[in-house]
Image 1: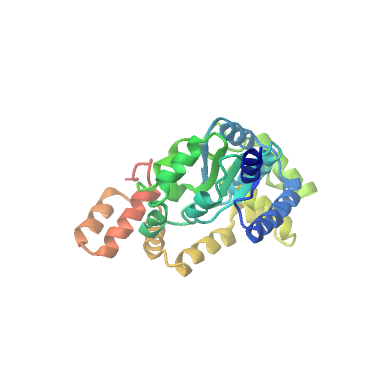
Image 2: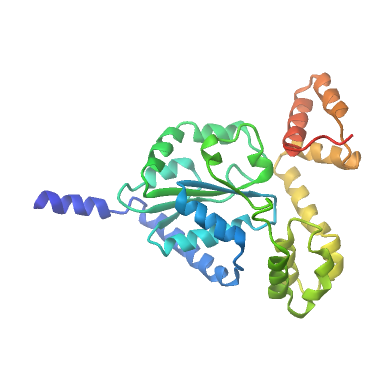
Length: 294
């Protein structure tokens, strides 16, 4: 009997340090408050369905499409079904916090960072990736991650996160016109009708709606046609965070008016410099799945 009691106690011991758990719980309360403004979409329903059916799900799209909002919404949904939702930033935390007797959902936002997949990111995962695969073989544990499309398209992207991918820009999950109208009406209220003609100009429609809501002084029609501040912010971050090769690759796209061809790639390869190699790699990643324009 004493042995059984000891086992039972062990099963219910929290594997997460109390101070870390307190931080996570505080964040989840904030998520729950923000989730009151979440507009359910077919993409959110699809991600939730995928997560229930799979042990690892990756949400991918470009910036501003709603990856993080859906990730958080789905995580909260899973918490209502008995899952212990744990936010992790390091892969080693998955191993340390794993409880084989507790339904657990590990959540990672912006897997491998926002802009580029580098060797350091990969090396952090290498020592524990097999152990994480074993953890996922226990049906009680799941992982959900969000990842920018430009990072996901990198050839070095870990295969475990390719087992079930929800691309929010795909035809089946991208925002429908009705969903865009709902977003506009929710955030812009009586001004929603002013942007009807601009629904399909940019993928980051949800972000634009949110920014207009937070900055009522913005001229809505001008902003939706030319959301310069959004892209300016992203480009500044590229430079400030040291992603120089990606910054240069983007500059080339601008210089050549998005009309790059294979000759540019060949010239970069022929130069032989390390920087040229990295810039060319970024171009290849940016245009992954697309043909160079001629």
